[in-house]
Amino acid sequence: MSSHAVSDIISIIGTSYFQPVADLVERMLQHEPVAENSSATGHFENGYAAAITILLVAMLESFVSRIRFLRNNEVVSERDVPDQLEIFFPDLPHKTELSEVFLLRNIVVHNHVWHLALGESDEPETKTLATPKQLGFKPKKTYDSIVDVAKRKTVALGLSASPTSVDRHDVGIVFRVVWKTLVFMNEKNFSHTPLAGQAVKFCGKICQFSDLAKSLPNHYPRDGA
Image (tube, rainbow, N blue to C red; front, side):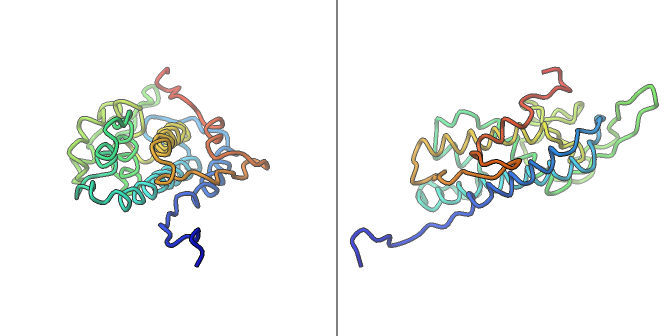
């Protein structure tokens, strides 16, 4: 065997998600956004936005799993991804944002139910009759500090805390937080977080995966940002 031959491989699925995410973003953006209310977005957009959110977080988790393997002696059991990343990288600049993104993933995957009362015709805002916690869901202990129950949104990023309200604005925020995290990890050690092979087909053209952010909203207009 050549002395330059690769003796082992550390598998990672993360880069395989680039094209599927691009495909889902393209499909979501083919439809104009439906006028939303405070409890739900359009059925089509909501499904795609939720799916993209789940896949983006899974993509990040796959890269974190690779680092867990390579730096196994630093792994602390029963720590979630934001906490473990802070252990790996004490200068992690946006742990609060990451915590909100991972909470949104849990909200969507586990369908955190809100019991809502529809407003009258002159009161389009819905009112909360019961929160997920009151209905028996058991989110992380940090839920109360992350979620503004009155607004049904996360405190720092304004992400939807109700799964039926997730839309392209949430996707734009999640995409940027996830990608910012991956770039940070990559700059720390390329071999631990290899982001090579980013080319994807999007809207009939070849572009870099990171360029998808240009097609996604960069703020929450419903909050006046």
